[in-house]
Length: 434
Image (tube, rainbow, N blue to C red; front, top):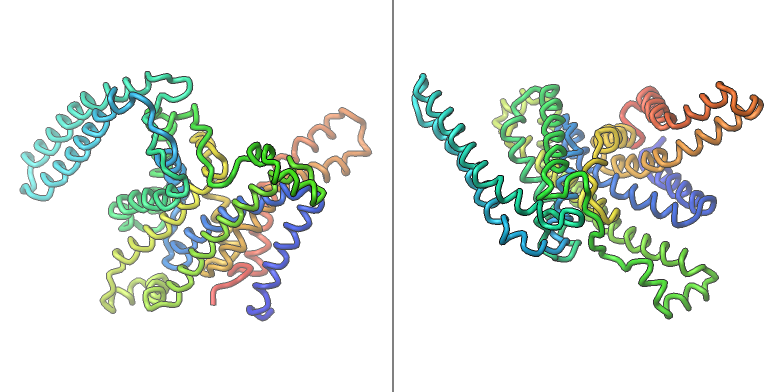
């Protein structure tokens, strides 16, 4: 099929799926799927920059998404009363001392001659710095976590508009990517994948265990929203009158209104990022990145700094994932560190990129929305199928129970089957790179 025709047809097919979902299951359900699909498309766009442009195998997507979620907390929540006075400055000073310890150890390694003295000096700096850091840091953490732990127990945020957290989430993820890239991008692709996965797990472990920062597994709820709350709309006489005039229940109408507002915001961000990615792809920089991806040896021979270019695109892709993470936490209205699982935030995003078409930005967007729709819909569809297939069996029989219980695994089966079909019949994805 002509590529110029294929892309519009596929996006039209996705639109039909969304409209059909709205007609059958309700527009609130369809818009919720669309909103998460738009966020997933942004994540896929970030991974596509790294893999499709530069061939970087990053399976630590989850960590960068989580940092974006943390940004929503640090920016939009009000500061916890008394937290800074109790231990906030201890934490700041402790973190600075920890950073100075690492810098001191690095300087000792670079400035001193190779030998036993350098090794002992480095160990002395690290050990002494660790104990000094803990002596300052731990009392601050204890004091903050003791402040009304049932509802806060963390340092809080800056009480700024939550929309500011979206670019800040990108900056946090970019900063983490710079640190990771400086140490890991020299590794071979398989080792890079292992390193990024390990670092993502470290980030999640910090969010789960550092209650002073993110409340850990107690979660942060009630985050600010950039759109009105449904209850506010239901209490607005003007909105209620308009909803009734359209023949809608005010409760249903308020949900549709807020989800449409989120859809508009997410679509604007996606279109801006997509436009920037397309401009980068068509620029000399984008052509250089693809040349490096296709043949690193030849690119080095032409005088290109491959490691520096890899670092650039690793930071850019991670920043986009951080923006998506902040958007998702804003949509959820809460930060739940325990929900960040590799299955959802790494495996599924990679499926989106591969199925959509790695190296093609429009393919990544298509894959993000389509795969998320399937991820949500496959399990209830599988349950309905199993109920039909087992309808002739005796109620409560072991086989019927086993078949219905197996519906929960339809998601994984469908994702794997879909990848096999796409890789067999369209190995470059639904919208291949051109």
